[in-house]
Length: 116
Length: 116
Length: 116
Length: 116
Image (cartoon, rainbow over all chains, first blue to last red):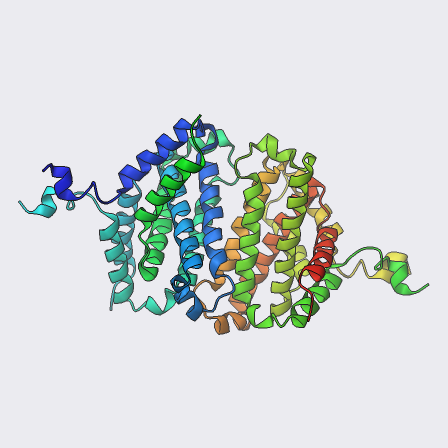
């Protein structure tokens, strides 16, 4: 039993592993010239809007039950995947560590919004 | 030496750990009523646009060098953190596994866009 | 010859006339409950992203020639129509005069960005 | 009394007049190189998101009352102006007639969504 197996990295995809698969995927198709930071940020925002589109005419209550409809649930997971894909590709080309950036942001927000 | 230490979870933030911190953060401030899936998807798209705003008047070449300017680099990391924060909070309230969704999407795309 | 004919309002659609047609269109289909300011602003941003999507992988030069392709040109006009439709419906429900708002904004910008 | 005065064009800004002012404004500041269709569509979507941001945590009911708060009302009119400004500049550089495009779209939608 290897350390990796012990840590369950074979069973669960990781951010690093996904980022690598996305970079290999783009390289194998020669898509890198299109993957400027500007284009990837734009594609990220377009995909985020496609996620919003699912909810745009729903009431807050209806939006909470969206996963009960299998077609809507599939669409939600598909758009989440697209948003994360472009976020990780953006981070890859600019050398940004998304998890570290978020961790530091939460640290700052804990100081900025203290609990009473 | 604990299993957790062995797996390096103390040294590197994980998606699961960040998702937990964000949920605790919102709960401690009683923000959950605002965190409908509709509102979180909308907030995600607003943050994605703030990331785009950094690049909107740059040429593709200028966009590739954005991290050389420390102020712009900080802003990029900050917006990446915000996008990821809302994506993870959205996934939390709907029970979506973002990493699994992306892994499955890459599997589908490998079939959909075969390499010649 | 009527005043309206004299002013050419029969030949050219006007913002006021389009705003009226859109309001009548929504009322005839009982869509008003969906047309909260929040939903209309969200729909506007979703349509704006669909316009962006046409350009997302194009170079600046390619984007300048987009109307030479008839299918792309039709898509551009269609998304422009959707963006304007939601902007006018948003303004209708909140009583905002879009043309006056823009005129005043240009006045302010002429002071804010003086020409050397 | 001139024809223009008769038609009220001196009292009310028109789309054509605003489009002209915006083009002159950009030309006087040598901003045209930045105003590619791609950049203007992107700026439009960024401004649309700034409009959405005003509403992102409001309930549908709260969103309907947004103009009662003078600061929020000013912000709404300001973002409406920005969205319309980029829409008209986009239309200017591509030669799109926004009012005609919307009029034709409403014609099509009347056939597509017949009233029972």
